[in-house]
Image 1 (tube, helix red, strand yellow):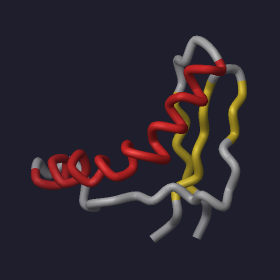
Image 2: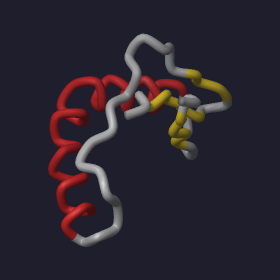
Image 3: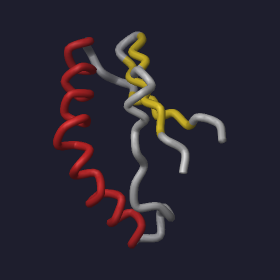
Image 4: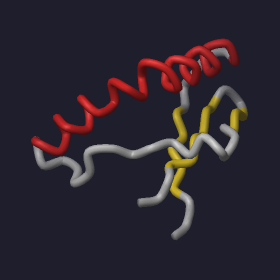
Amino acid sequence: MKDITLTIKGFNTMAEVKAFASWYEGQGEQDACIWFECRKDDGEIDVDSMMVDCHTPYDITENNLTMTIKPR
């Protein structure tokens, strides 16, 4: 299965990118299940989680952060 990536754009500085990545790796990833559950209940998506592949380094270019999502 091919890699799926998520790119988050619009950060103003590298410090913002790193702060977001740090938050996501900590509390953000644990709280994501609530967001996914709500979207699934609303019929917007059909999954209740998407795990970031922590073995693939994040790509940070021009204040954009790209994470690789583990395929199911």
